Amino acid sequence: MMHHSLTIDQNVCRGCTHCMKQCPTQAIRIHDGHAHVLAGLCINCGQCLRACPHGAIRIEQTPFEEITSYKIRVAVVPAVFFAQFPDAYSVPHICQALYRLGFTHLLLAESGVDILNQIRPRNIPKDDLTISNYCPAVMKLIQMRYPLLLDNITVRRPPSHVISMFIRSELIRSGINDKEIGIFYFTPCAAKIAQIKTSGSDESKLFQGGINMDTAYNKVREYLSIHKTIAPDVPTSFSFPACTSSALLWSTVKGECIGVTKRAMAVDEMHNVIEFLEQLEEDENTNLNYLELDACAEGCAGGVLTVRNRFLANERLRHWAQSLPSELDDSLKERIEAQRADLEGKLETQRPEASEAMTWDTDTAKAIHKMENSRMIAKALPGIDCGLCGAPTCKALADDIARSEASIRQCVVLKLKDPKMMNQLSKIWGERTKGKSLYKGNEFS
Amino acid sequence: MHAEYDVPAKDFSVAGFAASSIKQMLKQLGINPLVIKRIVVATFEAEVNVIAHSYGGKVILDVEENGVKIQVIDTGPGIPDLNLAMQEGWSTASDEVRALGYGAGMGLPNIKKNADKLDIFTKAGDHTHITMFFNIT
Image (cartoon, rainbow over all chains, first blue to last red):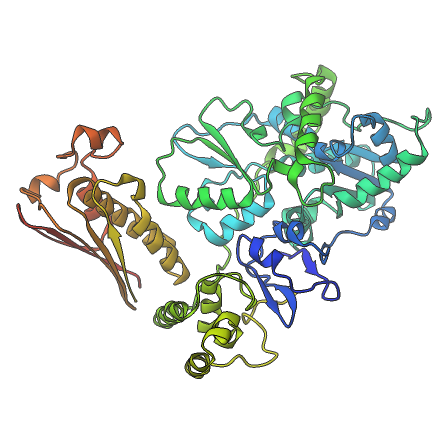
């Protein structure tokens, strides 16, 4: 099962319903005055964290100190990390800070795009739709809700995989023991951490840990506030020193569409993505060849762990890209060729499988019965979606009651308007047993 | 389980509303996604037929243990020659309708291809009643 990276600090959570109302998959319920995440429905998109006014939602990460347990400490840093800083902080200066923080090697995650493109140029089939696998929250969403679209997802590895494989292969060839290499990914979002922490996943094998971008930002910012100028004795560049301009923009909206000569489109922000996937599932006649889907508004610059305004961050990326070459120079191409043999056969991932979506019951007859009940219960509810019951909508409460996971007594509006009817209805539809966990089989976090 | 959806005449902007609502429901019942897809395609085609060719009508959904029954009933004017209408590419759609991207003459043939059972009552000057059945076990 997919790891779940968002946790709610029950001491801080006031049960205010903000997160519950924002959750695009309705995976949050308020119970005993606190929010709880239904792990089986959560896609780790992080919208709840963004919505929480009290800072009660956290994203777990690898403790920074863990990097010291490796002799060779590689940081794979998405370009958007550098864009978190205003222009006053130059890329070389930030690189230097990262080396000083203990990393021995530093790579731009987007260099993976260049490496991948050189070893095997992207070939998007003409008569079919290819969906990007770049955004991990979207991947999880499709696995859960749109199983028929799984066949359209590209199996070409995302750039972060490729850069990790490349540097490991290079280091091992230079005589370093595999076990001494620790590769850490700086993540702008909760979904990437969840992938890295999911045991058995590609990411868990490629990365020894994930470091949250805000944590890394604070550490770098602290260093830069003390060391205001570039020191002469510490390197200031990436271990793979160049990146093409188009690769650098990969994480921005339409970044993956650059260079696609066929019909390509990008949709960003989770609610938009869901709206579009619903449509796509019903109607294949879109004429699209390539579809990029980003869970966050403005792409990775809008990730929940970013600190800077996402528009400004993307502007810095575009500005930076203008100074980059459109092609790598020959020495770098040779460096890639040197690892070709190791990488060539491993450029594809397993096609993601459908994950068990939440259904009413495995028995169809029972499922129909429960659904009918839910529809009946929904008619008795006020339909104003106030959220005071602890469910995001009246319909969600009706569903929970039909699943025997909630009681109609939770409806505050009905209680004020017609307490007698509520008593009668709760006799028919059942009281909620105290202390019972919501959704059997779904762990609570 | 029973649900009904109104389908207005000539309002293409709402085409697919019934099909989409039915899809949402069936997905929660854990029905095979490939079967759901057939149901959605067939319902959508029938819905568009009602909008494009009739005076308006209804889509009626009934889900039972062994299958999904969808009835699409309009209020007329009926299909003069059903055999012709069942042929791929045959359409009486107006230029206006064709300009919207409909009227390719694939509606009924597509319904037939996707439904496990299909029954059509129609009569020129009367109404059309399509009953589709899909096995779900």
